[in-house]
Amino acid sequence: MRAVVYTRTGEPAVLEVVERPVPEPAPGEVLVRVAVSGVNPTDWKSRRADGSGAPPSGGWQIPNQDGAGVVEAVGEGVDAGLIGERVWVWEAAWQRPWGTAAEYTLVPARQVVRLGPASFDLGASLGVPFLTAHRCLTAGETMPDRINAGAMEGKVVLVQGGAGAVGNAAIQLARWADATVVATVSGPEKAQLAAAAGADHVVDYRQEDVVTEVKRVAPRGVDTIVEVAPVANAETDVRVVAPNASISAYAAGGADALALPVRPLMTVNARWQFVLLYTLTEAAKARAVDDVAAAAAEGVLRVGPEAGLPLHYYPLAEAADAHAAVEAGAIGKVLILTSDA
Image (tube, rainbow, N blue to C red; front, side, top):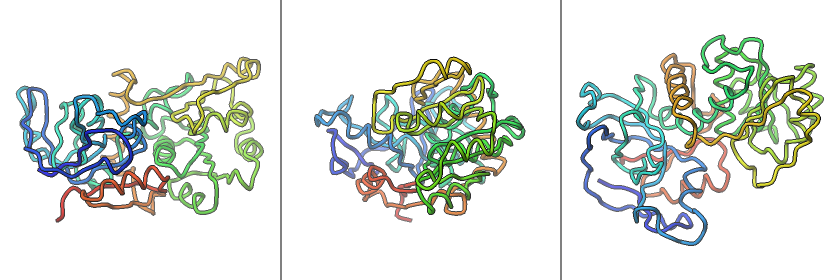
């Protein structure tokens, strides 16, 4: 099989397309013939690592956590009825060498989810963004643990960075759950994307005062904030949270130190929640996977420009360019097509 591999960490140029044997699934594993591999910021950050050029753990690594394809074979103890099923996979490369940037990937059975008739493009876009968004939306004390139609009726959600992949996912999931969604963006083009995703109100923070606009929609404040840049937005977040609200930060936004005013947050019993998908509890992951799979099955999740998430395609041979595009801040979703067909 053809696979993208790196044997040392660093720039996108460390990615090489090589020929490798198709692996055999061990007990509890599933072999998936990959159709589409999704690229996320976490993938290039893992590839770059600390910048030392050291080899990855195990000496080699196929990158990319997310993907979609067809089950080719299963190991002992796995339901053989999965063979031939269209599926999406998540965390393929987490503490394992078999990422999705290859013609085949090997994953534990629990990380294979039936996709049904939904597109492989959607399947390859679900893992990191939608599971992260699910946790951000459900971490708060006053928010539901599960997301489904009507689960967030009466709640107001603020999505900081509504044109990003996680922001897009948060908007789609929150709207499915009947929340009122306010999204912030940095310009007119991104405003169109957030609106296409389903945001009820879009605020261009370069042209409008976010606090004023949010308070116009939610005078008592918002119930949860999905936060991409906690340091830059902390002052705003503190001013717009409702009593017992939560701020879920899933990215550092280029800075590591966050200073918070204690008394204003204490007064409203607000919660800051930091979210990293890989180290979530197994229960939280299971809830997220189940809910995202249900939303996909119901046809309420979308990708493409009409969903506020433009798609950018690269062949497997240009995986380095795909990683470079994500690292450079490509707007939308970068996908790698693993077959020339």
